[in-house]
Every structure is written in structure tokens, then in C-alpha cells.
Length: 60
Image (tube, rainbow, N blue to C red; front, side):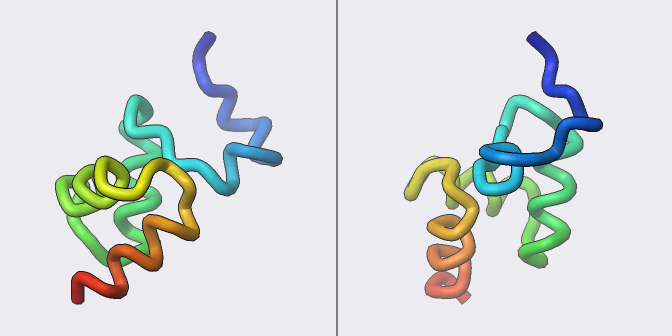
């Protein structure tokens, strides 16, 4: 089932879905990193946005 962009609530706000290009773009922009850096962070700590943010802060 495709991700419904009009239903942005619940887990959609806290988890990063690397299979949706618009999410990769939006989260990368939010954190000020490249899409590849975001993918690396998700691979390292999982899709929970707070964990990704903490990881990216440590990497800077």
C-alpha cells in the first residue's frame, strides 16, 4: 500500500521511510544533510527520527 501523504500522523511523523523519495528529501533537508548521509544514519541507528537526529549531531 502506498504511503498516503494526506495522513501525516502517528508513526509517519517519527519514522523515516527510505522507500519514499519525498520522505528522504524532506528529512535530509530538515537535518541539513545529503540523502546519502541520511540513508547511512538510518542504516546505523534505525528509522526512528530522534535516533537519526542524535546520530547526525554526533557525526558533525
